[in-house]
Length: 284
Ligand code: SPD
Image (cartoon, rainbow, N blue to C red; front, side, top):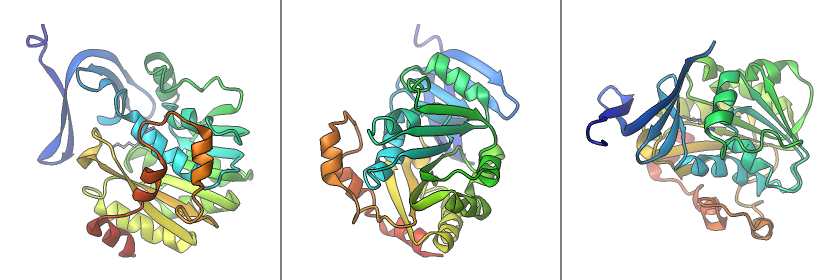
């Protein structure tokens, strides 16, 4: 049967290169007000969420991205109480954040309700904490929410899709300036910042802007098989804390979390950069 059903999902990363997955079944296909939303069952990576033709999560490797975008800042600012997540409608970041005992409230602002609904239905292990009483889900434009609000946060996580379409604004300097104003004096911003291999112009520009806003700006890396090039970057931006000097190893050990990618050594190693990546950050 596998050989007769010969459907492949191919995501182009550049004009002449990409990533391809053999598909077992098409589970869901819909068009929201913002984008095409698809869910596939793949042979190798389990269920796959695809937005506008781009892979967002797979069951097999989503843990890497979600552990790294959350535990890195939370093991530095270990007294974090209030968190804002922009995007992240699959729920993976929220699932990791609520594992930290100091957390009192997580507000998730997702522009596309269809993403949340589809993930609740088809990715129950990822969206598992949406009903947690500490979690509030709002359907709104994240940039407008940050611009119009007044509440301050200890941590803001920008769990965006790629800088095209509705998420483009989440990579702009004016948005990061607003984020700065919405953080407490010891607050941290962590944002996904694309692939250092394929999206070099995005990274150069983004880090140049971030360094003009935040006193501490560091790029860190994770290896994510289903994302373009497999090498992914995150921006750690902070008003006070340094990601290595203020990293609390004992705090993480005491949590006894069952993480599969993140650990004390990975925390420190993630900030040690290959030369071509270091040059992208230093360029600005
Ligand atoms: N090209 C893939 C970029 C995906 C970044 N966001 C993923 C969202 C997972 N919560």
